[in-house]
Image 1 (cartoon, rainbow, N blue to C red):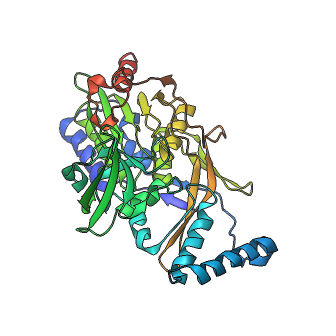
Image 2 (image 1 turned 90 degrees about the vertical axis):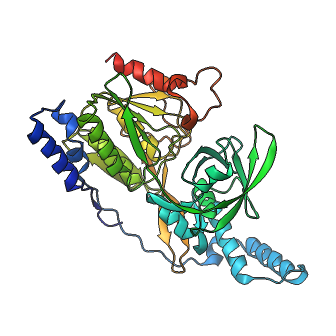
Length: 423
């Protein structure tokens, strides 16, 4: 990997708007450290140089035993000679490649060309889909709906939080399918329909929906001032490429317009997203030191460090069992430096990152090739981030989804407010 030079530039208009506000009103803002979140994010992070590795041709005979190769040929010949179906060698090769990738972990996967584009667009704030957010169910099979976007057709057709997607068209969902892959087969061309079968636990039955895929512009960071307080609340649903701009705009509005002096960042049910977006946001709050370290399988490590500028504001971060990946990177770094109180329940525990390779035919290979470590060098894969203060849902609301909870019934949110009001 060549030397990376990453720079995030915040829009000039935002800075001009803040400057104009100051000049026209003569007001001094709460504190320079709080206000200049634009400066805190608009930095570059220079990483060390990663040695380049050229792929070598693999001699199949050198990696597999003679017995294994004989078994492969035996199975192939039996299929060819006795199956009532004609062999489609393209499909067989696709299946072999997909199976080979799935042998490693649930995050390593081969994505056929027809689904690769829908995965590529998932990092942006715009996608063509049905409008649901999903997570892994307790039994690991399918995809549990944790929120339904009112702008999508899934909402119109009656998909509900708690529904578990078990089938897309004729494809049965299995444990070996990652959430990203499931999302890719649900998404598709705008205006086309997709048949989705869900298991609805509350009614103990399967329901089939025919849902129209729509162009959905998602907002991944939004917030408001909590009524009667000076506490701002910003929910981040995903660490997408557009999230930073949305966070900055929301943060500035809360400070300049609403008078925010304390902050709650809600990462509950946030499955993660772009690695660098999480690093940039953490860098906005961390003055100096290691934010995270990427470690590959060879012992090589690459550090991402903060610079000397950071905003300062009392902060609580809300997490739960669906807070994963980039959410854990950010909350873990903030916890390490004592910059936020982490409230909620143990996070998901995804401490690995994938390298993404676009293949010549348009398909894609995603390979788990890194661990990301917290500033103290620990890896949370399979473990998660432990909150500073564990708060379980109120009795009677254990099965409610965050997106449907009223604030007064949200035990974790109420605890965050209590903490900040006492600071």
